[in-house]
Length: 137
Image (cartoon, rainbow, N blue to C red; front, side):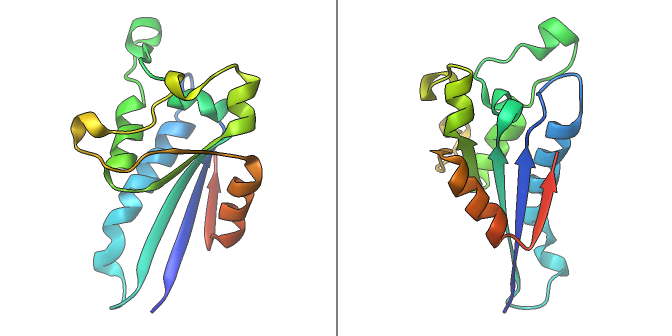
């Protein structure tokens, strides 16, 4: 029985690039690969937001209003709905003057039970060290 640990590290801004949206799409899609695995094998994905990437977690994004595109707020909620481990870098939140009240911490409104975790960068580094595969975008 083998567990493949996938770590998706989001450090891109939420707008003007598809990088952060694609990272979340791949993280969510990774949860459907079990049909291709050997019996007993598992895939365990996590998403970590660092640097400018923490801005992807802002509540009430208005991408349609400003850029004519949908926000990734729904994607972030779907990752929590799937009980994915979501880590948000505490040091980077502090750098931008953001608190837990400013960011998306759960998906209770769509039935999610998992909450995002605000952690130090050292915890995110541990997540990367434990991963079998890492995608940084």
